[in-house]
Image (cartoon, rainbow over all chains, first blue to last red; front, top):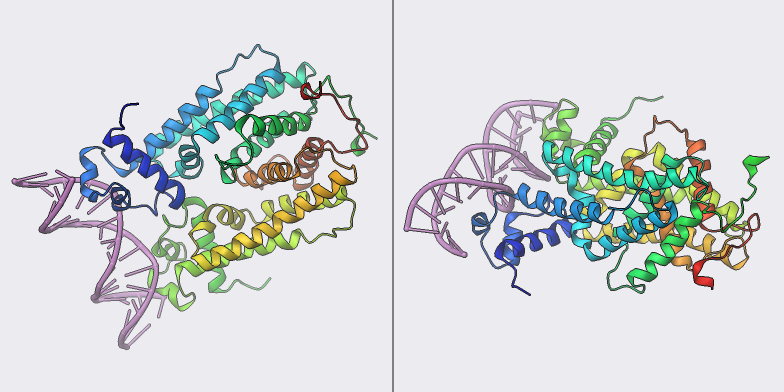
Length: 201
Length: 201
DNA sequence: CCTACCGATCGGTAGG
DNA sequence: CCTACCGATCGGTAGG
């Protein structure tokens, strides 16, 4: 375990403060204060406040995208399981960065913001692809794959609001139960027969 | 249709700017500019910037709580349907206020923040109660009612991120499909038999 | 890493 | 509703 560089300490403190108070309500002096420094001392390690945000958000995006590297040819249910477990794993392990990612990305300058939106769309596409393939091959039974994708990602994304890394459930237990809810929502076959609904009459 | 008061116009403009740029990145001069006023002119209609946020957030909380006034003795599936449709209705109709509510409530001063947390908890309790009752009477099949509640509310809450009031689906169509996903996730009985899962072996 | 300091902007008030 | 203005604070730089 090498000791963290001063730069890493600054990023850590900034992430913590951005998470709890938001980017605009955190001043450079606040960040410096966490490390018993003066605000001006930060600038020999970093370029700007914006750069701090960009690095934190980019790192979180990296973690999510890396976790989503799955084989499109795999069985859709197994692939979706990897995607869901990967998402929750990144959430729990990188809760600080993930929270800043979801909450503060829009304060990035135009160019960085476009990049992040593109990467978020690419991430979402993994889920959509798995769900659409599952619909076609009969693994899932879903009327509207696009909306089903938004549903699944919504249930996952909001979890940073209530996740507690030291909570009652460990990562695997949380994954098991979240997966069961998601797979049921998608009407995963063939373990369960189709059911009748009002609309079918 | 009475014309809006100046105060309502200010709240509207503030809500719009808070939604898109966040509370701290919006200045009183920005809000005034929307109405072709000087910043100082706002203060004959409102007391402070904080009060603007409080009113917007409170109004959204009112709308959600009012929509959640359901009969606890009603059949759990029917009650949950009311809760889900009510939530989506408020989201679509009050997207501006709802977005500010979810994103900016934490910038309220301590006392208002405590009130909002209490009201949010009361709101959540309606969902949890319906889901727990449904588990007990066999309407739903859910291993962990608390987590299932968080799952359902996560899927609903995040929707402000992608909801488009002029989108492809109208409110009823969206409600139908979201309900189908949620009810399936909760394994709603008796229309569908229990299924086997890996863990059951 | 510090002190000293910059221009810009903030929420808000006085006074009319 | 405006002009004029307040003290505080912002992100950041100069210079050592």
